[in-house]
Every structure is written in structure tokens, then in C-alpha cells.
Length: 329
Image 1: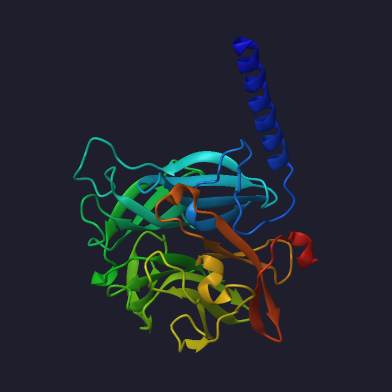
Image 2: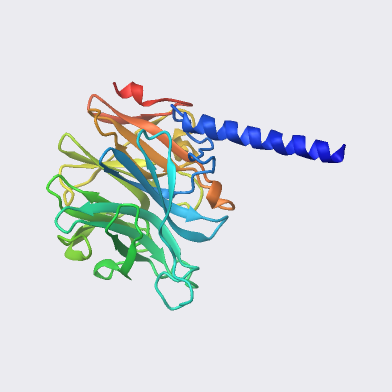
């Protein structure tokens, strides 16, 4: 009887798992803050995300995490933004060399990948804290690949123009110029620097955007204006997002009220910004993307995806328990 019961129990578990995987492959909506499984039925593990679109496919890069430690940079692919295939680790920490910049035990955060049309290379930038140094290194790091999913080869890490660099994003403007936006001076300043033509180095064009103790930058350009959403600096605790607007990346950034609306909007829906994703093929369609951090279980920190809309020229992110891309039609 025990043997039969064990077999029945095993088949029941396998059936439920197959149902879960099948259901996940047929996903047709976003459910912000809820568990999100990949096409193999595993929790998506790609935090502090950045995205790249190429030849009809979206690529999601993010921090691969254990409960606390950094496992490298993960990459997932999707045709529809709902269902994501795990493509493995795009960048691994280095084993067997504790002196290497990305020796296992380092922390890789907020990876962003951009494609350089001149060189044909995929370039990954990320915030790096080196093994055994806590958050004292405050560096930015760069890696390159010939294929979008990698493997990426580490190039170097440093402080851009001598400045501390922590939370960050990269942005490619309409003319193909790329920029690094980063928290500096122990996160009291937010800075922007232009990258070299090959996207592999910083130029000397580097200036203060504003000094309001902000981090977690996410940026878009809409109808000639730049919109930058950031969070305050309260550790893992969520806080009120803000938005700054400027006519120029190196111009006068003006702070406006938070664009978030709905329950817990004053704490960014219990999350923190990481990216604003344009939806290709749909006019004025953007998705605000945030992490809902679980500091004791970073691997299972869920994601918040919500539509970012413009109402009379003002960006609005309204909370929705569930939604789909048809709202942009």
C-alpha cells in the first residue's frame, strides 16, 4: 500500500507540474507582484533588469540571485513579453581567481545590454562590487559578446572619471550615442556620462544631473522630452518614486510629482524602479518595470510590470492587478 501510495503521489506531483508549465506557456497577461514562471516552470531569476529587442525577440537581462549572493547575469528571451525562455547565464563570475574583478563572491547589479551597430558587438554594463569589499568598490563594469545571449567576456571595471558608481542604467539616444546614468557620491548625486563610440569606455563628458539622494534610474524619451524615474535611498525598504523631465540629457532636469497612482503608490507599489520598456510596434506604449525586493530571499523577489501612459502630456503609471498589451491598441 505504501508503495502504491508513493507512486500515486509522484504521478500527482508530475501532473500538477506539467499543468503549471503548460499554463505558463500560454500566459496572456501580466499580474504585477505575483510569481512569474519561465517556459520550463521555474521562477524567473533576473532582477534589476534591462531589455534589448532584436529581430522580433525581446531579451531580458538581470541579476541571477541565490537567497543573497550574486550568481551572475541571466538572460531570458520572449516573442510576446508574457512567456520567457531561460537562455542561461550571459555572464558568469570567475572561479579560481579571488583577485579578479568579478571573482565569485562579487556582486553584479542592474545589468543593461546595448548593441553597437558600428562594431557589431553587444555591450553589457553593470554595477560591480568586488569580492570581500562590501559596497566600497562602487564601480561600473563592462563586458562584450558577439551574440546577444552571450557568453559575454569581461573587459574592465573602474570608477567613471573618478566618480563612485552604483545603481545605474544605460540609454541609447536617437543618434546612436550611448549614455551611462549612475548614482555617485554615496548615492547623493545622480550623474550622466557619454560613452565612447564603441560603447566600451566613458568620455570626459560627465556631469551632475541633480543631487537629491536618488537611485534606481529608469529613462525614456517621448516626443522630444526625456523622462527619468528614480527612487529614494532607503536600503531595501520601498519609498516614493520621483520623475524628472528635461529637454536635454545634459540640461536642466526639473522634478515633477510621482507618476504612480493607486494603492501604495507612495512606496512605488512596494517596489523599486529598474527600467522603462518601449513596446515595439505600438505607438506611445511603455511598460514601467520594478522589483519588489525580498532582501532575505532575493531569488524570489517578484516583478512589477505596469503600463506607463501619457495623459495631457503627463506620464501616469496606474496600478492594475492584471492587464495585457491590448490596452495599447
